[in-house]
Length: 84
Image (cartoon, rainbow, N blue to C red):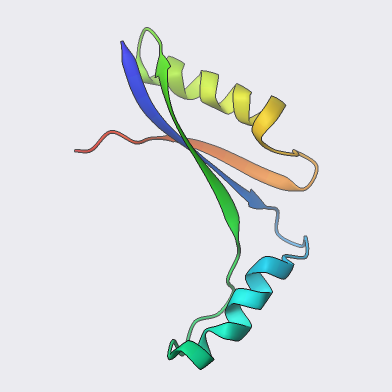
């Protein structure tokens, strides 16, 4: 069966996030006040053929660790993209 999966990759806590900081500084000028601790990241969407959803998530997690992220400075999480 085919499962839609999303992998989110973000910088680990304590790692400088200049992109997030730049966005956060720009928000008040755009009329968005009261927003803090902005962190930027990446999102990957894919469909994975697997026996079940948990197997698809395990495949996505392995892919995230080996290719989509740098585990030294980034966290990667896989989740179902199924609407429901």
